[in-house]
Amino acid sequence: MGRRCEFALLKRHLKWADTRHTLSGACIETRALDELIPDWKDKGCPLTTPVKEDKFALLTESGRIPIPILPGMPMYNHGNYVVRLGYLVKWLGEQAEGMGIELYPGYAASEVLYHEDGSVKGIATNDVGIAKDGSPKEVFERGMELHAKCTIFAEGCHGHLTKQLANKFNLRDKAEPQSYGIGLKEVWEIDPAKHSPGRVEHTVGWPLDKNTYGGSFLYHLNEDTPLVAVGFVVALDYTNPYLSPFREFQRFKTHPSVRSTFEGGKRIAYGARALNEGGYQAIPKLTFPGGCLIGCTAGFLNVPKIKGTHTAMKSGMLAAESAYEIVADENTPTDKGLEPVKYEEALRNSYVFQELYAARNVRPSFHTKLGLYGGLMYTGLFYLIARGKEPWTLSHGGADHTKLKPAKDCNPIEYPKADGKISFDLLESVALTGTNHEGDQPAHLTLLNDDQPVNHNLAIYDGPEGRFCPAGVYEYVPLEEGDGMRLQINAQNCIHCKTCDIKDPGQNINWVVPEGGGGPAYNGM
Image (cartoon, rainbow, N blue to C red; front, side, top):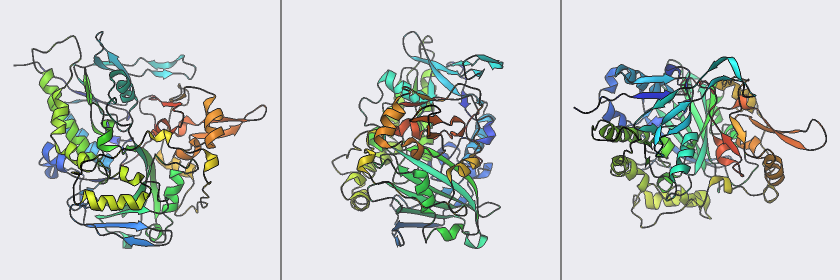
């Protein structure tokens, strides 16, 4: 017969239906969805915009050089769908509830629990109603402990619990450091005459220099109003501390070939989130006693495709199968966490690893002295012809936080002033995220050393925090008494992108989970 199994899913959002922390492009492959729910088209799945037109171009400061997209190229999107990922997540949640799976929205997993033998026992949610000074308020509520034979961690990119698990179980011992990008996104309502549902456009080049990896996307949605999703990704291994990903995004929209799309339109949403770019080389060990890692928590984004939804879903499906097999077995122990050992082997034999292995050298090829142009040539020669069969694997060359050069060795970047029509200032943009945190609670952005921001980051890198953060959380302000500066943390602005935890050159910033439900309130991002 086997054991009776129960399944539960925790999510930081206040309600499952609002998917307020979900942000992606998104242009997705349905490969995993076809396997999971073959009749998804008949069940009201919000995938209603098939890709009808693909465009790819190299931008110069004033020009645009079209690059043909052929079948087999990573940017070839025919057969894929453009979607606001939050809507798809909501729909999937409804399917899960219909199957009897317990959903716990509004509860944030803040701590990993362990058995005496060191295996994972489950997670604990954080206490709610604690004041800034640590004292309980009248609305105090103790967090819950959820115990499980196998806990599957799906925290998204750079999960705070995954960091702890990686250290405890040495999951990254045989992997390169993960490499990241910061993705910034806006949704616009545009002139109907300029709208073409199903059109997908990508660019590389300007406004980034040839040694900084990144690019843009522009997706035309098919909804009641003429909407487009526009975004810009900047790799977080950039070297110039004066670079601002947010302002590069705003500058991109002013390009002569781009701004016409937005003229006469209205921006209705903004957000940002870090994403994995390390690929095959940076995948950690995926299982440990009591659990495993899936999706962007493990780093399954296919970088040249700019797609990770299908690989995340497939990894979750394989993890679930492996976990169910050991949990349902009556002969497995009941006093310790169980490791789904077959999961990693199943994943290595799946298209997830096949895709990532084939694309493993594309992203690091942009680190050559030729930069952007070398990467484009490598992609053309080896990805399209050899498909990852070349007998070498290129390295990313170290963690992103080690890549910044001292400010004295770099030129400040002069960004144009926002015009309030096509380009906007930072705080005006943050207001569109709907982000909100209870003010009287312990800080969720903590410093390991209070002196390091001024003595190290400001002194050497001229305070990069205020530029790499896409939400205006960090700013250096004068001391109230005497000379000098201090780092002010505006935690209420935080949109949970995790960039600070990744890019801080001294690894002094530690992002921890705030009260459940706090953070951005995205609607279909």
